[in-house]
Length: 87
Image (spheres, rainbow, N blue to C red):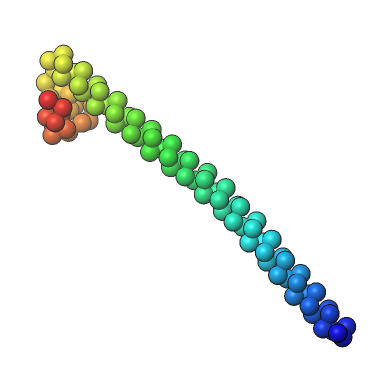
């Protein structure tokens, strides 16, 4: 094997090794960032769902205490249709 061929082979091997390492690093960073973004979205969604559930529970309690659907709508922001579904 000539010196040039050996040098080219080592160069190609080094490039392949660097590419493989770069891909691994990129995938790891991508997963980390993806998880962070997913957690933020999940936290935001969970908060919104919790608030909606709290409004429904408040509306149920207001209905049990004889308050009008109109007043419940004004206080909770829940639609009249949603309130009628609670009855």
